[in-house]
Length: 239
Image (cartoon, rainbow, N blue to C red):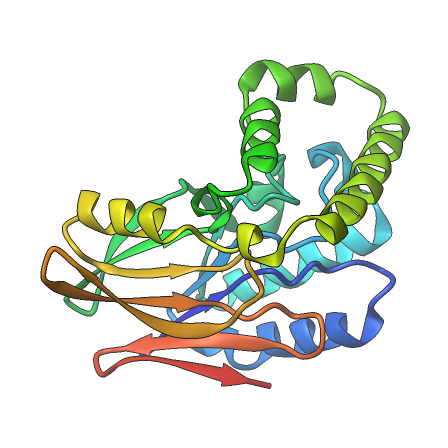
């Protein structure tokens, strides 16, 4: 039985085609797996658990819950777009929220999972912003605002982010090799799986004489994709 990993779906009502791919995935491949890990950015944005009542959000949450009732354990990690997932989302979707990073024994191979944005340390502006919005004080203050105001603020932040991405060198938005090696060293030279960068590939890192593999998950902008791991190893599959 294979364990499945996906990330960076960026689901929204404006992309009905990829939404249907995701729903079909949940009803098919995912419901046959014991575990499905979603390593961040399931939604294009998440304004707070009080937005579960939105018609599109409710549709996605219901599809996750149906998959979970079928026997699949769904484990969700916060991404940079949906770090406001809380206990109400987890309960409604039948999922479990997991820490970033999280370590697991994957068929006898120690494996570290992370969304990936914390490894992009060359982008110092982003790391400062990330530290601010991930603080408990910021989240409390933000969630205390009315939902329409939160959505307006998120739209403004997304617009600013698109402008900033165009002016930044592409290489600083990828992971920093030193940050990757530090994470691998700290966890005993495991396999690493992450998303965020939208640069799907398998990499090998030689750290202190140890060879570690790093899998970067695909995004779901053009088509879906999943990393499948079993006792034989991992392999990337596109839909």
